[in-house]
View 1 (cartoon, helix red, strand yellow):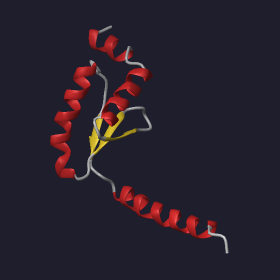
View 2 (view 1 turned 90 degrees about the horizontal axis):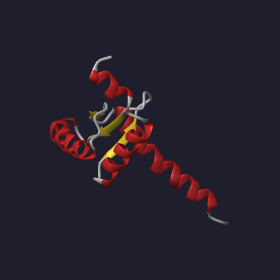
View 3 (view 1 turned 180 degrees about the vertical axis):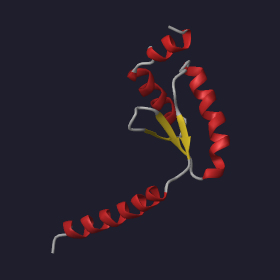
Length: 98
């Protein structure tokens, strides 16, 4: 087995969780993809290169050498954030005693 293959096999779920926690503590919006890869979500696509440098620096300090991602916002992200406040307002209206 190649040395790189051994290192990749040794990356555990706890390492990924530590990476997510460190990125969140740095004030970044982080999600885990369906394949278990920590992914930073940028506010706009133009911020990706700047955020990539920050993410690499943070993960290097953790000695995390696994996969990670940086992406811009999706159209569905905006739709979900717009729907959540509406749902909260509706639930508050139904809780008010008459």
